[in-house]
Amino acid sequence: MKKSNVIMIVTGLIALGIILKAFLLNEDIKMFLLIFFGIGIGLGLLRLFVNSSIKKMKGKDWKIKVLFFGVLLGFGLPFQTWFRKEVLFSMDSAYLMGSITILVLGVIFMTTFFGFIMNRMQLKQVSRY
Image (cartoon, rainbow, N blue to C red; front, side, top):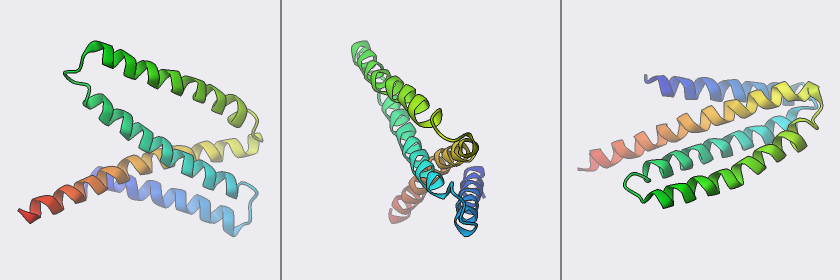
């Protein structure tokens, strides 16, 4: 089994375990965990999109590259600042560690899950020919 598949399974099980524990014990953090896992999945998809866009930049004019990174930083930095100040710093400190942990698990899970799906699709295309 590939390392990425093991990482995907482990992060998925850890995230599922944390979320199930919160729901079974009726902890107050349960909704934060679901929201931050969703945000982590979204950030994982955004990371994959940006990486694929950067790979497509080869051979493009330098002005296009500067424009791409300018737009990326123009949207990314203000959003990051807002998220840090208005969301993370305003949260109850008891929820912060669990929320950040589940966010990171969501990013890692989605990144590896997307790679898993892409490998499956490539194997199906190869087996057709």
